[in-house]
Length: 320
Image (cartoon, rainbow, N blue to C red; front, side, top):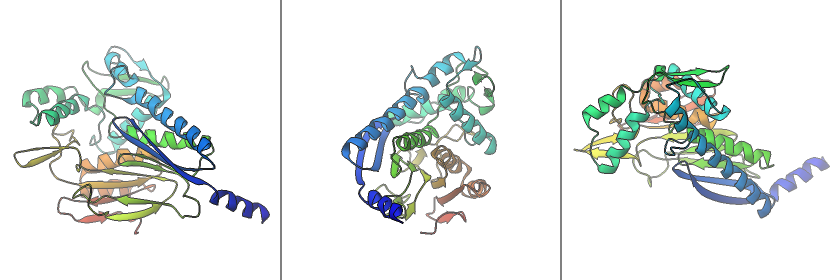
C-alpha cells in the first residue's frame, strides 16, 4: 500500500508542459506531463527530432526525401527502402485493397495539379488531369516484403503519403516520448492525434471534435480518451471554390476530381497510422460504405457528418 501511495503522489507531482514545431507542412504540438522542465525539454527534442527524421523519409515536398528518390528510380528497378517507408507503404496498400482503391497513395501526379489549382484559384486543365491520371493506380505499386523493396510499373509515377504519414509520425513521436519515460502525453499534428496515458488524476485527455460547418464552430462532441488515436478529415480549411462549387483537397481516384459532396469524418483507432488512413478512406467511400468499412474493424470507430449536417456514428464510437 505504501508503494501505491508513493506512486500516486509522484504522478500528482508531474507538471504539464507544451511545445510546438512546424513539420510535414503543419504544426506538430506535443503536450506532456514531466517531473521538471529539463525532463520535458529532453522529451520534446527527441519527439520533434523523430518527426523531422520521418519528414525527410516520407515527404513529397522535399525532392531529396527518400520517398522522392524512390519515385525517381523505382520504375527502372526494385529499390530497397527504409523500414519506416516500407511500413507506411505496406499499410497504404493494405488499405487500398480493403477499400477497392478508394485510398490510393499513387495519386501524386493528380494531387500536384490540384495544389497548383488551389494556388491559382482555377480548375486543373482537363488534358493535364487526364495525362496525370494515366500515371496513377495503386496496382502499379509493387512491394516485396522479403527484400523490402518498392517497384513502380511506369515512369512518371509520384507517391503522396499525405493521407497517412502524419498519423504515423504522431505514433512515432508518442513512442519516443514513452522511451524517455513520458507516459502522459498527447501528440497533435493538425487533425491527427496520438494519445498516451491520461493526465495525472484524470480519466483521459479531453478531445473536441470540430463541427463540419466552420473551424470556430462549437464542438460536435467532447470525448475523454486515453491510449488511442484520433483523426479528423474534411474540407473545412483546404478547398477550392469555383463557380459556386466547393472542391475538397481530398481527391477521388475514380475521377481525379476533388470531392464536392461535403463530409466530415472522425475516426478513433488504436494507432494514428490507422486513424489517419481510415479517415481519408471513409471520406472517399461516403457515409454508408464508410460506416460499413469501419464496422468490420473491431479496433476502430467512426463519426460522420454528411452534407446535410446529419450525424451518424458506429456502435463503438464513444457516446460522450
